[in-house]
Image 1 (cartoon, one colour):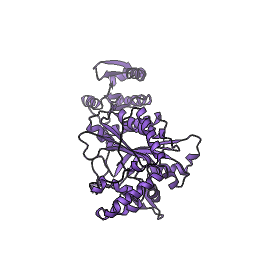
Image 2: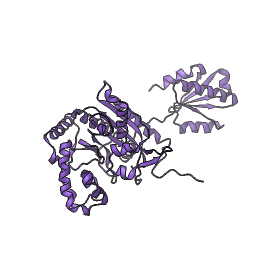
Image 3: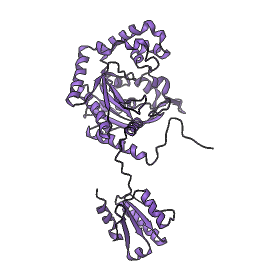
Image 4: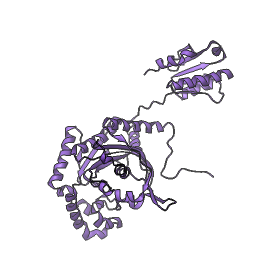
Length: 424
């Protein structure tokens, strides 16, 4: 029987995985600089967590979750996003009681959604996300947006567009909600069944509908910015001022609606322009969610965060021909000729690895010429050659592959010799 990988998943092979490691390391480094700490949560959670945390009117909950019953009859779901799990952990572990506030977290890990696979969109995908919990200061909104933008910029992406909007506080959202119901209700029968179901539950989600996006009522729908109260206007103005002070360019789009139910006040997306992206131009999305912690059983706590797809990021880097500075060179390749030399080669490799040098050797009894070709394929900086004659003299021949220069070095001095040569 031939087994094949499940649809919507991928194997990330050597040669490609190094790119993943590089961008994940970059994510961890920028979070270190912004003082966000890593959080690791289970890959599956109680289904109810996502129904309450993500929202039961969302496409994620209604159509895309991988849900199953365990042997105890409990309904569990592979996590479709990271925020609900992060907030659950925040509440369960009482991080709100820590003297260090706000609580600033990040995560990198696989998520699962049953979607139609396409370029940049997989059923198992990796998200990098951050969550800042415990502060209602507009400055932390600006910090989160700045972190996301700097992450992309430091990786070398161009033509980035930061799009922001305000969804307002509860009072503003309620006023907008009533306006949307009044706007859509007379002709709601012309919309898809999903939109009809959302009219009363969450009419804001109608604006995010892909099926009815070209309906004439979409273009004339009431804009949330027209319904912001004074507090919400002042909050949004402060966020914009902070971004301007940091010289981070942005555009205000009153039609921006995030797809999850828990957002309020600041909402944003980072998009990328140019040819080669098809219909997928959004790289990152997020916003403020001041009611989510209470929804999951915690105290009243403001929060803001974002999430982005590593797959989509790598696709954007490829489209823009950005070459990541991935070091896939081997420090040393050990070539042995003769049985006794092979025994010595294993010990030499062991010692070099102990000293922190990336080292490999032949395990297929190849001839000298074939071993040199192997060293070339590994992009080895140095080749260490040992045969019976060298073994008798307790030396090796070290060849620098870039210059072709070679010299005899005592086995006892080899590690120190290579370390000095490899100082970068």
